[in-house]
Amino acid sequence: MATMTMFANLPISLMGGPTAGETLKIDWLSDTLKCALYTAAFSPSQTLDKVYAGTLAGSGSVEVANGLGYTTGGNSTTPQTPTLASKTCTFDVADPTAWTASGAGFALRYAVFYDSTTTVLLGYIDYGSTLTLAAAATLTITIDAAGLFTVTVP
Image 1 (tube, rainbow, N blue to C red):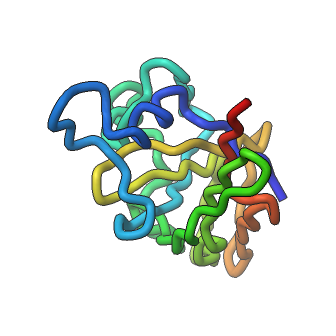
Image 2 (cartoon, rainbow, N blue to C red):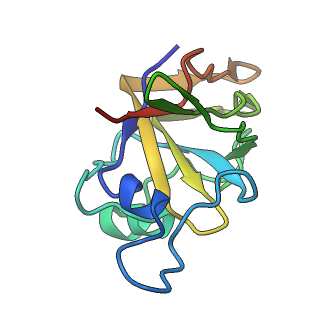
């Protein structure tokens, strides 16, 4: 299990965005959430990265290339109903569909979670170094039992 680092702009997007009529807001239960894979060339910016397209434009073409067991945009995950207990709201998702490398396989360092309906970035998992999947190898991302992320109020 890996821990997700939340992008700094996520709380604003959860609350409806920074301006009136904002379209970059998340509807947790009806939007499509995905997990995309990125190479070590990706350099996450907590303050600048806000939308899925921004990570590509800001850091160059750093998503794992389409093919060899990976599809551009990543795999879907299913959001679960948020829960509230002891002033902590938990946002959870099902584990994304696993990837199985083919041919020469592919390499990655980051798993980036985002709302593909609005392109809002949620957060990322940094594996600390490059993972290389050879042909027939499978990458399974297991979401922590405590949820994808939590928000706690005093």
